[in-house]
Length: 177
Image (cartoon, rainbow, N blue to C red; front, side, top):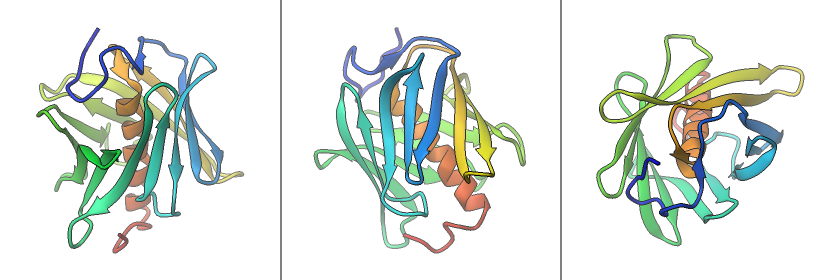
């Protein structure tokens, strides 16, 4: 089992399965399920995919909000303590920096791709997110494949990052904080 600094020892870890799915259940809520079992959700406070709360089924609540003068960094906190920072680099990728030094890279597989990859510091793909947009309901869902055992928080931060990247590419988040 892969352990990450900042994560509880055995809580919220996912086994490698093809059944993971993140689906919009409402306009501002995305639920993560594994084989039909709810693991957590992201609840957006705004339509710009910047302010949000993550609620894990077995590990409590996390806050996501921009920090800094221009809001160029997004901070993840739990009970006021910093857990991680998310920031976009010049290549359009999101760098996820956890307290304790663990770092991940989230990016689209290629330009205009509906496939997103979350990689560790060595470049190994840990999680693949296949997005599908429902134009009729204007909602997005993701089929998620974890290559190893991963923590539900990391998977939900990947979903948050995918939504943020899609909103940024669409110009929705420009100048918003």
